[in-house]
Image 1 (cartoon, rainbow, N blue to C red):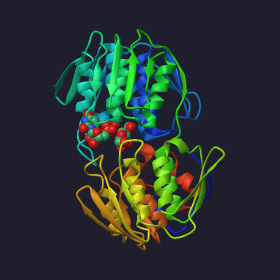
Image 2: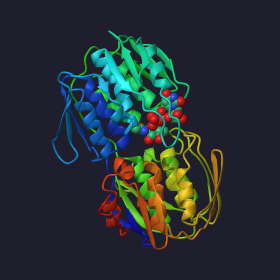
Image 3: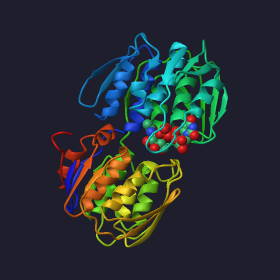
Image 4: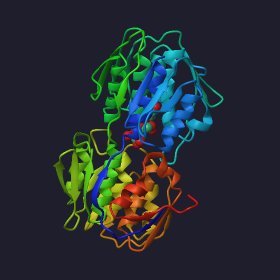
Length: 416
Ligand code: UD1
């Protein structure tokens, strides 16, 4: 992605559907032999990967429109999620719960490490074990069997999003009652629960620390519209503020963005609600802030890189602490190459600004780090080239088109 920086973003932009809500919702299609229709599905590489994964299980996928996807798991023809797919998209691992619930068995590759941290799946496995599954680890795969899952009380050591989703999808068809304590409260978990409820599941408490599920024998088809992507919203907000722009973000879910709005406002952004979204602008200088990533409703780790890029423009020292993933400052070295003043010690980074960023060739290491580099490139002088754009295509729909429509000078190199 080639960016000629310095142009303030201005105009109106429409959000896409949430990637992190879409992927588990797609996996939920496995739970019924009837077709499900999912609307507001973003056209992303991860969605393609999920279609491929489901295809391998015998789930038919059909696009009904640009963003409307029908999935039909009439009869499953497989029960395996292969390494090749899971390694490119960790979210594949949440197929374990629904497969086990529907087919009584599942063989799912473990994802392995990741650029941002170790990312174990122990809580997912402990969860399905608690529901009565026999689980073995063999040849890099989790092999699970259960003639019928049985409801249980499960306490999560930490509120893992993926583990909550996996356990939830296993529990909806288990016999009896399941209680997930210390569950993830992310809006994407809530959206999955809404989808499952539309399919006939009995769930209470999604969006709180305690989710209760009363298992049912059968789930049926459903028609569900995915929530807008709060991480895309936050990314566009950071880009707008970094460039001193003024943008209306249509569809921005204000209720899901409270921590983000609070922190951006503290840094000096002007944010106001408008019909169907948020308006964000910056007129004066930016103030430094302290920022700590936390599980929802705290500040999302998925926006940490974008905020770091933004805070290089604040007038003073900001302190960023990453508490979710142990290796999520990979973008900092690249920002430093662009002229940022960042010192890291363990999970904390001190960003001193304002720095005059100058364009440079930089390399993306993961999805959100890439977006951090895009934010920096937009604010920098001259030309920044962000390579390994495939990371961005995993999770941002038509990013170059959307930023271009807001006045950014951004283009995709032919060979990407
Ligand atoms: C999801 C999001 C990801 C986001 C993350 C945290 C999707 C597809 N991805 O990832 O974008 O950055 O939430 O908001 O929704 N952990 C364990 N054991 C486990 C599972 C997790 O120790 O079995 C730890 C992880 O190492 C991490 C923390 O729990 O430190 C949170 O991870 P988790 O919420 O599971 O993240 P994901 O669901 O993988």
